Length: 119
Image 1 (cartoon, rainbow, N blue to C red):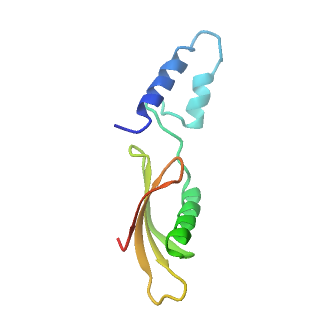
Image 2: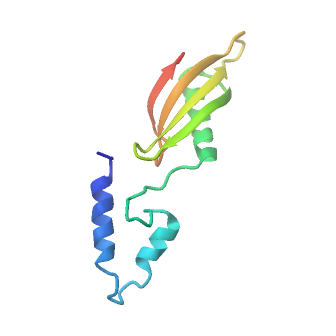
Image 3: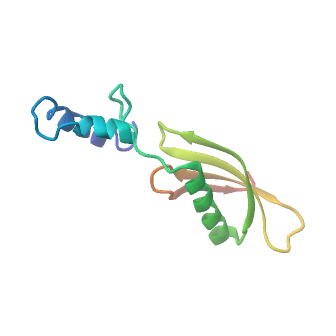
């Protein structure tokens, strides 16, 4: 079960109850345009962009291992899980070799859910 699914289904039902009442005209269409859920009615929580995630990954790597120089080797947004899965290669200051890590980052908050060094 997707985290937040019940919230989204309740929100969808609530907003659909206003359709055709004249109260809050265009409420649901505004939310569709903003991407809060797909036209099929399936809930879609807003996700951080790749640029925002890259910035968050940089902050987390600096905090966790002291690395400021890093490259993202792959990044995938898993919408159903609400996570960005990111493989990075980083080099700590004065290190001869680079290291790798896997980060799983919450797609809406940017919070690191999992960090695996040497992955």
